[in-house]
Image (cartoon, rainbow, N blue to C red; front, side, top):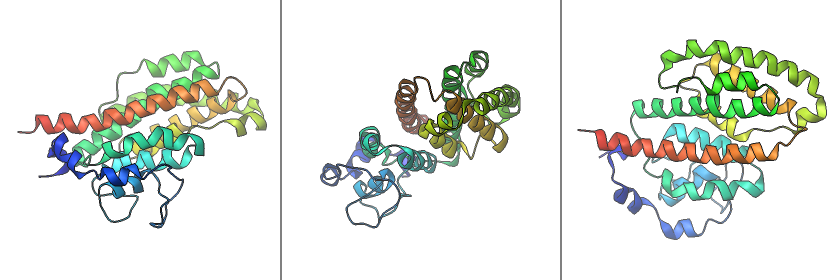
Length: 242
């Protein structure tokens, strides 16, 4: 029985709760098995797997998201956001089709949630509304049709970025967006993914001198919910299997 076919009870039995209780802090980067660990090393640890930040029990797409997000988050936010997700990632590995579905979920969040949030903060409301109103991305075939709105947003955001000044540019950061791009790499296509990256980063940089923190907090909360939806996609797939 593969991980995608395991019941919630069977997955729960794979989690070593004694080990989980010893994890109080998550650290940036990869580590030797010396007590420090990143989020995905923690997943391997509680699943009783050999030490690795690429545990066999976890979906590679979710793993890519978590590794990038883990390293991009500030020290005081990483453990709070990511530690509750650790036991839920055990047993999420599934089929290639499920991986593509999850990658498309990340791409959709990047294009329709993350990027519009930064565009609105930079005052580029029309572009934000155009991206937010796109249909949900559920197929790679949709990518060519969304390139136009993304590229238009990228161009205007880049102009705002150029006018923002070095101090504002240096103040911006989007760890959740970087993580979504890492997870979406397999599905979104280089052109659409990179254009969304440039649009979001430029808009965030241009807006950095404004009220940046509330937007980052909102996107962090949204990214947690995205991970939870990716995990739940495994359960839906298992239930639909013959």
